[in-house]
Length: 295
Image 1 (cartoon, rainbow, N blue to C red):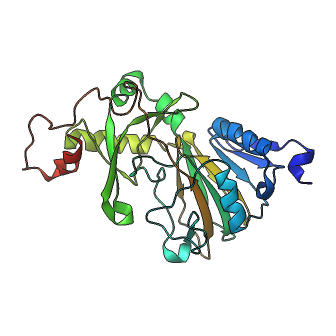
Image 2: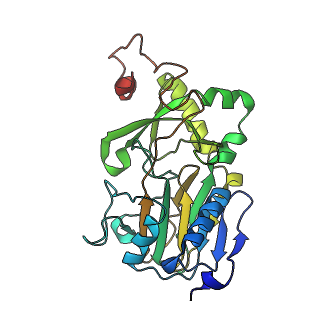
Image 3: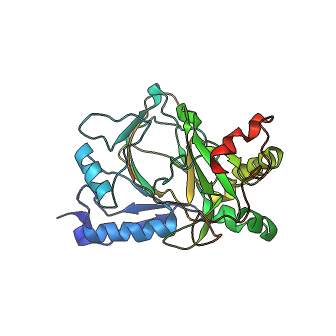
């Protein structure tokens, strides 16, 4: 009999912005009721932490599949050929995502959620931070919310050495389950606001990526080995603090994504304004080349 058969889980809030620690669910043998509880808690708290877990590679994949089909990451390594769904990142191999990002926004359908197992971590440092993108949108001024509601951004995989992988997404995403609006730009993958000139995009995008991770919107989590984290990729960003020495090994599975919808029109494909330069394109400026596929 597992813990989850005998008692309701204990949920402890970790910050005012987002994040909760959950004790009392054995993830290696999570029931259908456990999975439903986790889904509800994730929609409420955006990122969940489960300390003192023991997940085998088989168990990790099985847990992920209870939430949906799993992604095979196009660019990151996995620990063995038997578990292609698992991404393994080691500090010694450069697997430190120390810029704010939302996972794989360079794909047409970014991830829905991730389940990360901290296999080994240093005694001090290597914390991870998450930022609540609902709050980032809600606390913009009303005129700026109205503007960004109609904008789209180009995201690409340049940080993975593959700039040819790119997608266009709304700057504001409407969460398909909660109906809430969240900012969807990040410093790691977002390159250009499509409806604006280069200079306009440069100024506004720089502001938005900095604003979206303002301290009041964030949580910082200190890891212990065996902790499992789950987060909703549709309304959060995250980053690792690269301030540690020693081995840091994480294993992660990711639930396949859906197409982001914006607040303008029934889906992200309906545009309030055309892509900049659609009426009059000049090859004289290299800055607008990135927009060519979206005219």
